[in-house]
Image 1 (cartoon, rainbow over the protein chains, first blue to last red):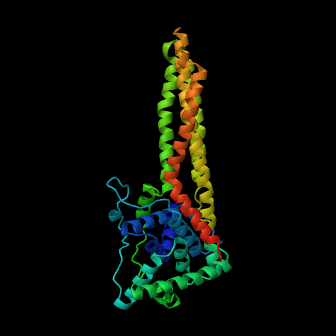
Image 2 (tube, chains in turn yellow, orange):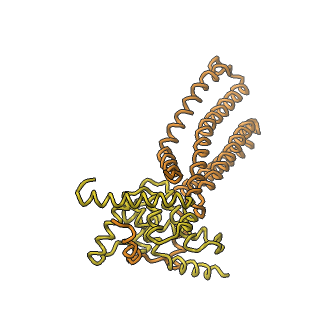
Image 3 (cartoon, helix red, strand yellow):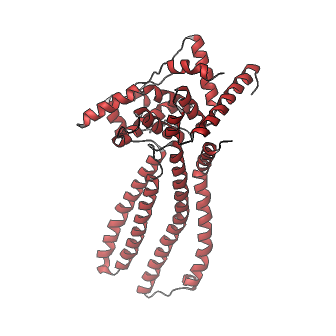
Amino acid sequence: MPASSIQDTFVSLVNANRSILYKICRMYGATEPDRQDLFQEIVIQLWRSYPSFRGEARFSTWLYRIALNTAISDLRKQRGYGPGSPIDPEQLSIPLQDIQYASDKEEQLQQLYAAIDRLTEVEKALTMLYLEEKSYQEMEEILGISQNNLRVKMNRIREKLRKMTKEAAYGTR
Amino acid sequence: MELDSLKTIWKEQETPVVVPDPEQLAHLLQAGSRGPIARMRRNLRVEALLMLITYIPTIIAYLGMFDGRLSLISLFLFAVLCFYAVYYYRKDRLLRNMQCVTCEVRSNLAAQLKALRKYIRFYVWSGTFVILVALVVALATLRHAMQSKAIPVHWWFQPAFLLGVMTPLAIGLFYLNKWYVNKLYGRHIERLREMLHEMDEDR
């Protein structure tokens, strides 16, 4: 297959799964430049690993692994753009800015993201996969955690989120 | 907040992200990864290149200069260069094995923790050893030059005295390296360890 055709296939596959990337970047990136940077890093890692993708696993499973591995195991304390930065996010025109949602839905979504933000990195990954309605088997394939363990953790996360909402409603931490 | 009731909102949220077209992708890939491991590997390559650029001409120069009377210096420098070649190769291999993005998240974290611990051990020991090797080579070169010019070797240049000085120096360097490397990677190691512990616990 010619190189340009491989690139086209790759771009269309990533494009079809772009919502996954957006959500991961939004969950793991604290600021807009962080999210931009993480998005670029994930795309680079996906492209580099693309030759090893043989279609044995689902593309989305493969993509989740790479995206979550890149987001979770990042050594950087803080991403930032200095004057000498090789990539200017503005020039790349990959708009990742938050958009305005219809009030009710947006509020709920913002609350959800705010609550997720208080979870640990591992819990964030689990919540994301759960919200994406991945089966426990798929979660196991992505995270490498046994299904029994995943169920226990998911119950704990649900309880944690419920508690957080209660605390927020009563104005305590 | 009931997580199940939020699934629809989660799935329906707009995702304002545009995947780069092939041209932008090429631009992105040309800039290379800004990930920490990629950056560490790039720095290592630059360091190795600088070493080659400075050492090889010096080795050749000492071989030819002064009718080859200082050719022993070339040999010493070549030994140091060989040592560094092994050092860079090993360090690069450790960095290469540090990340497996296509693996399951848990095994990737475990592999990263293992590789990072090895990397730190190697960093501390080689960091101590490299300075000592360079020092020994410099002193041996100086001694050789003094002997060839029949300059008397003073008491402070005797091996026993130098050993007495270098032993505490080596210990000091070891602890300095250990402190520095922990300052660089200590928090990340702790974070990896905590994440793995969290993934493994089921009670």
